[in-house]
Amino acid sequence: MDFASSPVHRLATVATQFDVIFESICFGGLSHGILFSMKTFDTKRPEFSPYGFTCEQWVPHCMPRPDRHNEIELNLLTAGSITYLLGGRRTTIAAGSVGIFWAAVPHQIVEFEGETPYYVATIPLTEFLRSGIDRKIVNRVLTGELLIDIEMDTVDEASFRRWERDLRTSVPILERAAQLELRARLMRLSQRISNDQTTSPQPSLSRADQLACFIAQNYQHPLTSESIAEANDLQPNYAMNLFRTTFGTTMTAFIVQHRITHAQRLLVTTDEAILNIAMESGFQSLSRFNEAFKEACGCSPRDYRKTYKNNR
Image 1 (cartoon, one colour):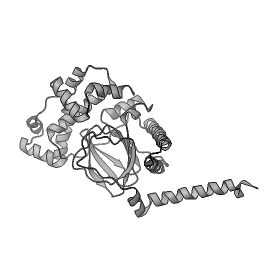
Image 2 (cartoon, one colour):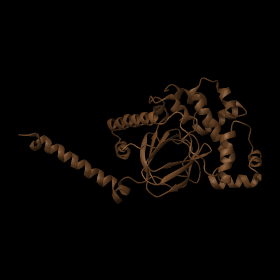
Image 3 (cartoon, helix red, strand yellow):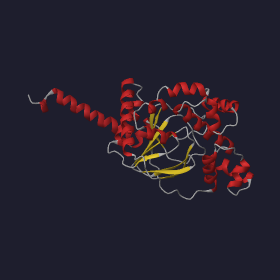
Image 4 (tube, one colour):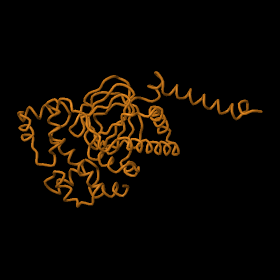
């Protein structure tokens, strides 16, 4: 009996056909929307509420306010584009690209093209830090860059789809497989992104974007609503109302967000004393830093360092 007519071959063929049918049912047409509901940003979601290790499909839309969580985020777009305001810069992820950024940095989708869902994978910071990718790339991500791999692998869409499926099963061996495959994808992304990657020209910024950009560039210095407005040739009340209307948060809260993110990076990547980190991040006192940090992250700076620094 040759292999083509053997029971083993027939069983393998049936298994393959079943997998194809399963994928077709789960990932095609209306059934996809029923079985795997698309995600949208929840405006009531608390800051730094963890997503964990996930891979899901999201519906593109403009976010009414910035989001922050402590995972590393990968976005895969198969069509259309999304534009983030992150770290005071507008960066567009186009179709056929994979973007990666540290989501503890305030990030907000401010523009998009098309309605095709895109994939979002979230990776716990500890897993990212021990992934073995180039340290220069790690540092670029942790300092607030949104890095883009414009050479999407031919298997990327199938891989993200498989990770989405596997991570919904809650089967440990499949979760581990997805974790290892994502780590491999990160290593390829790291290898391809040149360390001297030039940044694309920035589009013209709106008045509100200019305010956010100014804060992102100056949060380590003493800032007030008045000084920010004056630097941008605006009246303070107008600037405050414009910022809140556009980004769904206050300028003061936005300043604190950037300072906390800066402190998080230093806590993980350096042995600096916590007092020095507080001052370097823009806080005027250690007590205010500790209060703001615990309110944002749910733990003290010391405990945060213990949790994440040991995993580098």
